Length: 498
Image (cartoon, rainbow, N blue to C red; front, side, top):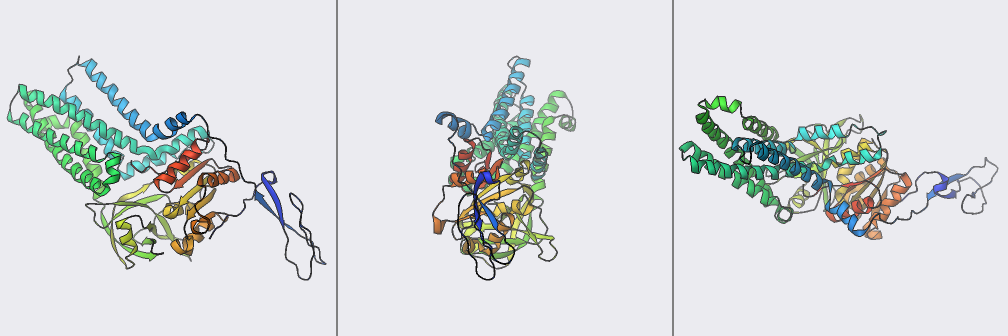
């Protein structure tokens, strides 16, 4: 099924193609082009319907040289820029430590810097904090220049804060461990030895986490990465508490004070309390909820949850093995047909691996785990723009349904998929057409794969859109985002290794 309908626009943007109305009795008419009307005259009132067919837009040349495009739009991504800023700030702090201490920094100050970075790292994985950041960034009104709004929309690159602060924490803690080892060599006491042992456990766990998080290893061994990240993180947190108390004991002996006195005056102590609270806040909301599957085809299913309503622009983490793997999905509000009230939410799951295939093959009512609070995602930043183009391939339409339901920003939709009705059902297709009656639904089984950059640009041209949002696989996402950005059009797609 393919819906590639014309867009209502001014006549100077397209060709006027007249459509003759239907009359009772016989009628005659002549066909002409470009502004002429095909009319039918009868004894009844003469009338005509004019349909505007947009002209095909010529895809403009990419801006800049090939080298500058590669550097600006691929290597110097916002994610990497944020990572670099975090590291630069930490380097400046380190230089200040060196200057103020004349090359002999205090291990307690170094430890505090490590704890501060660890807190920032965890905060950018805490749902309420991330949602707050999103809410602040999307407050910018449409009256602000596009140059500002398009940069604010990159808030979804906040993963750069998580990885940048996390990496900096490892470097700081490695330096702390070196200084603590030096102190132990100079003062071999039991409390100093305990401090050293816990320090080595913490730094070992940090290195395991950092190594497993490398993009290449993460893609190749994703399930193992999750296990390493989670269990090494918990081990490091417990060891960090033990180390904190052991370190306070050493300081208490040096200050001739109580451990409690040292702890309440230690930034480390308060940082670790906040870090632990963020971790507990997420896992304390682990719940086993009933799911009602709606099998769409052998390739896709829609999982409905009724335990709470869900506003647009949120996502949840779902699992059937909560200690080993989690899968994030954008939610779609479920609405009662009669009242129009939201009475739950659903997620679209397509066959992309063992876990998703298992969910598709289980049509029976069952329970799945959900953890933490609902989280804003990439598409929430669409509120920053006056008009947008939404591009999806395959099951990427699932997250877009939430945006389409919200009906906040005028939009055009391009959805490329195989047999849309057969694969995802008429319900999903109707939801797309309800949000954009002129949506381009490209059936790849009938028409092959589209020139997705050209088709996207065509919709940008028709709508005079300010930005493009794409939900697809990594290859297509990169192609569309790069193809738009290098032509001066803001474009946003998911970050797959954040």
